[in-house]
Each structure stands twice: as C-alpha cells, then as structure tokens.
Length: 214
Image (cartoon, rainbow, N blue to C red):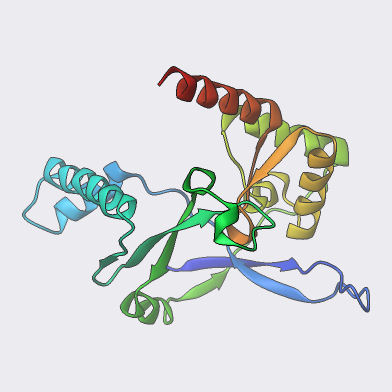
C-alpha cells in the first residue's frame, strides 16, 4: 500500500502573473471510521472491537475535559492537542475587553516527532485520475451551495475535490458566494471553513435565545 498524489497549479504570481508552477497534493484514499479502526486494532491485539471503541470514547471525553481546562494533551507517538481563542479585532489594551467577548476558535493538533519521522519514508505513487472536465462557473457555485445543504461546513479543499478545480479557482468561487451574501466563513488560514449565511444566522439567533432563557 502507498499514498497517491497528483499535481495542482499554484495561483498566479501577483508580480509576474506566471501560473506554470505546480505543487503535489495527496489524493484522499477515503475516510476511516471509528468502527473500522476498532476492528483493525482488535485484529492486532487481545482487545475486542467493543473494548477499543469504549477506550476511544473515554479518550474523547478526557480530551475535551483537559482542553476545556486550558491544558495541552500530549499523546505518545501521536502528538499534542491545544485550544486557540478568537478575540475581537482592534483590541490594543486588555481593559478594552471582557472575558465574555473571547471565544473558542479551534483545536490545534501537532504531530509527534515519532509520527513525522515514520511518515517521512512513506511510499508515494502518482495517482491516475480521470481527465478533468472543467465545470462552468454557475455549476460550480450551485454544487458548493448544494454540498452545504448536506454538510454544515466545507473547506476550500472540499471544493477542489467535488468541483475538480485548483485551490485558486475554489477560493475565487467561495469569495464570490461570500460577496453575494450566501456564504459566511469561520476561522482563518488552514482552519477556514464556510457555512451558509442563513444557517449561521439562525444558529446565532437560537444561541442568543438559549442564553436569554438561562
């Protein structure tokens, strides 16, 4: 077994306008579920599949507990997990803000040196993908909105996959839908995700109603 990769074009260089450079990206081989992991671990140990799932559930609960306490969780040969926060823009003095205005942003995972070392030598082979059929802009945008009806959040990488386009094109399409008021983004950088604006607003209203009832 080995990982498969393919090439994508980098977005145009802002200074020269050149678009010839390529970058390699792993092609997803599919999603591995908890059930599958449990079965595989059970086959390689004296634990039952149920035992493994019980441990995974307990690990998830303890991970949440320690992260909510502001602690970093370091798991041998896997890596560490920590929480990042979201702060309102324009703050220059701690006195300008109250704790209620600071919110959870994301969970950051950093792979352990052992795991990175093992992955450095993984075998790679170029994926043979079906010839890409470039979709019209209208069809690409419609696919994005349709996917967001099924999944609450999507990323630019998701758009690249189901629209079979470059990251540059995916970001351009997402930006257009945002400008039209149909999408709202959460997070930033590699942790940036997109959600339907209407769904996000409804969620905020429900959250406020819940807080008012407390």
